[in-house]
Image (cartoon, rainbow, N blue to C red; front, side, top):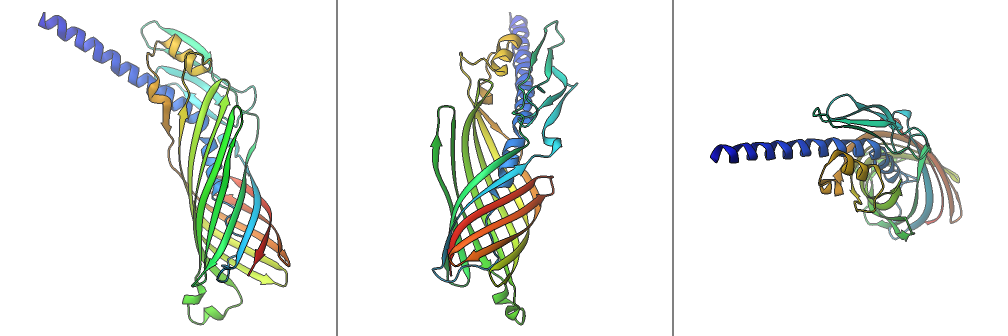
Length: 316
């Protein structure tokens, strides 16, 4: 009897270990497909914080509405499934891939169970955009605090909400001699959180993106025009909650049925790998009394290209 119980225990543990391995492989497929989206959104959220290196004077303020399209590098439009593990395959689309570029994943557990299913296609878009409403106010010691906020937009199969806070501080005031230079030099840091939800081929996804940036800013104003530039560091952390239910017809539900994975509940929350990046930015702002018009270009070490345009009002 003891030997029989030991054999049953071994078989059960082996089965559980196999299930865990398969769940990890499925999770990696989901991560590889979705991860370019939070990385791109993080680059956008970390952009558009400034249109000058000069902080507002005490109680000066601005309100700016801007939009930043983030162009996706080709490397983020597809991934290779690979030939290791129980799930194998060739090249397939990420969420930014082509409309008909979803590949085939093959399942073989080495025990005679084999099947193939299609992975999701991409959305067929080469960019994603982050709209932003931002307000800044001047504090003592040549410091400025900025706020970002967007009331949550709720539609039938989509929702979006944004909030963030940033701080900009003049550096030249602390440097003798240079504090008389006809330029502005500041350091700024900002943190933005975005929550969004959407459906991809019957698969519900809720995405949470946290984006943090630190930058060194330089600007020079001549008459009505301010030219500015910056170098900085971006950091993005993100996770996704995946909807799983009996009515779901997505590839995850198909995998659950055909592979025999009894429980995919571990996939209800997926933690993406943290993404860090360096960036450089140039831009210009035109001020007509209270009205401001700005445009800038940003490129990151990862290959993201961002173009920002905005309008606003600014005083002091």
